[in-house]
Image (tube, rainbow over all chains, first blue to last red; front, side, top):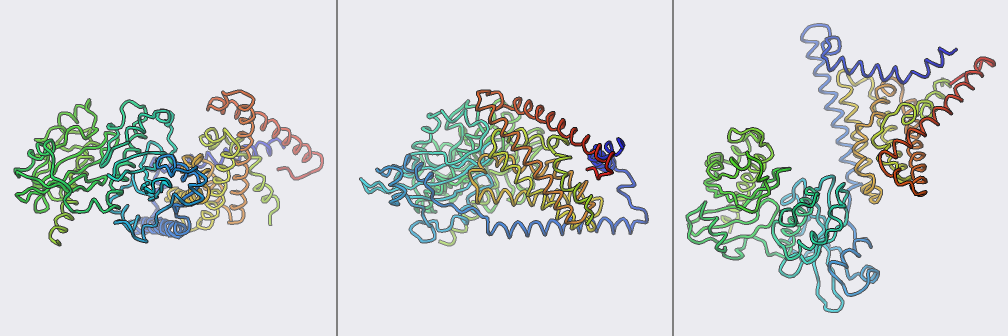
Length: 398
Length: 201
């Protein structure tokens, strides 16, 4: 009888053991497990069957998820908690209950018009990335002054998950207030009490890198997520107000001019502000040169900004914009190879978008161990080529 | 219906409790048992995935070739985990904010893959659903008990029980208690079998 008990007790152990043995046999490549008896035809049939069954299961699962997504897609609504946060960064002049109840703070329905951007999904497809997107636009009306402040809800990928920020803007599209709507960061306590970090966003516009906000916080990835969210929100608010189209905004300053001289011989440039996460500006020289100031994401090595002169769909010249990237300056490979304009030109000049896309991320310039930095540089040049193509077609259209 | 098999399957969540007996799924068990709400949320999410992945795998058990069974199981389990994640994001955002990071980890929870391999791939849909439900509820109850005890201890001022070390200590003590009680039950069942010719579980 004790045997019966023992048998019951160890049933789960037997099952676990069998599972382990099966898996080990497969991992070892045991012939009994992997090669069915019979000729090559049978092996082919079995292999085909495996592929077809796996593909069918994947197809059914994807269909199920696509169907569920229609009903469970998260739609942004204005709740009281969000309204209270907005009231702090864009004050309505009344308390939180009144601001929410009397609708001084409202969620903007972009499809009803009034803004240059009418479809948020389409906007995110064009300008968003897998790590950053705009979620909603709100207005906050001050009852005393009648002034309406725009507040953008945007997210950037932090260390663990998305960090959702509410960002208020002044009339010059500069940040006037930042609040965190949600986050699930494991190192958030390192940022939570740092008011200087949140204050650093005030007055900023365009692309922001985490190093511009703060250094040595102990939560670099979270800070990067916040900077990414702010960057895409900055681009969005400028576009939504119709101030960031292809119309020339201003002539470039001396500092930028000296950078542009590295890639173009034009005597005068006109700047077209783009303000997205991937492209900051486009410069058109009086000699017809088109220079794109594009950014690439180098993963844990940060972001890099390059000036890329493009003509005929090919790269003509490249220069790194100093002080804008966050590649690790202590990394020998980064410093000696990727911070060297001559090396960059050797790699990229004369290449089309397709050729740049085909470059190996690792082993770029014959140097190994620089996969993430290489990825950042390749993506910056790709972004430049892609944007130059659309910029040129817009110009021709006009 | 085979009543013996039905009883064995239905009581699987107790007699082969995934946490206290099989010691599976320790990562979410320790990580999410600091309070009862999180424990209940994660337990029910895991139970949902267990039931539906067991049903799906049982339905397809004669179709899935032996060589690709593990990738097939993972695809099926991942689908249901994604559904749970979507549901939480849409309908329970506050719960999602607290347990959201552990939801994707359900895909690699040993309990689910273990039951798929050991039970659902060999049994019919009804028994597989019952097994998933039993194991899922067993896991949920274990998490809730652990969460409740830790909550009480934390409320009593023992801050150490907030940490993973405190979680392991609580788990160890509860595991000892559970297995002691289970031993008493098994002995009683054995005696019943000896003297009455009863049907021991």
